[in-house]
Image 1 (tube, helix red, strand yellow):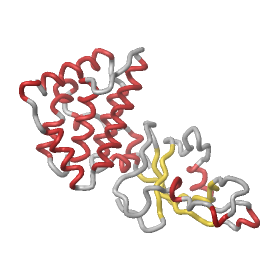
Image 2 (tube, rainbow, N blue to C red; image 1 turned 180 degrees about the vertical axis):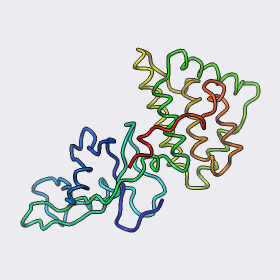
Image 3 (cartoon, rainbow, N blue to C red; image 1 turned 45 degrees about the vertical axis):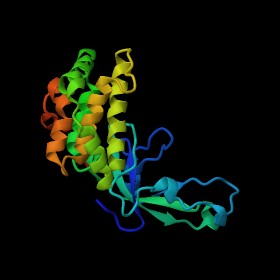
Image 4 (spheres, rainbow, N blue to C red; image 1 turned 135 degrees about the horizontal axis):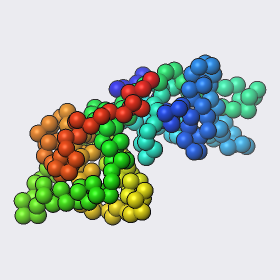
Length: 240
């Protein structure tokens, strides 16, 4: 989705509260039709202050991807910036929340399926993590190297999907790492289980562009955990 000029996205907890460094209640702001101030460093002259887009709406109009957060689940909101009378309020900018949109929008064209994958990864047993490790070697034996990974990289770059692809990979890696910590383990970089979930995330970034390529990339995950398209979509991904 592309937004009009001057509009932006806001990622929060599903409740509408900001994350740890942002305690604002965006759901309440929408209900009350009030704006949320953007805090500015005191004593900085207005003419020397950066425009707030660099932190408040870095992915505003014209973007085909959204801000990345490793927090799952999350909520997603549309907002604009409103100016304050600095002499009276001491503030420069506020955020006006207009409406909530489905959180899966932050995960690309296959956002519902990606949300389902992340939820499944968060619930893995350690035996299932080991199954992901073994399935990678089954699907991608070293003597029959499939160039699908490199083809997907090229396709993502050529179609302006590289940023989305990288964000989905980070989501998948973070979910797998959280699960490992729950079991008192860790997942190493470039481990086979990590590659399996990264291949799956890449597949979902480009599946609408090349279903056959995505099918190849999903091979290791399919062997271990079945068809990702059959996983239940979590309610947070669709809720408004």
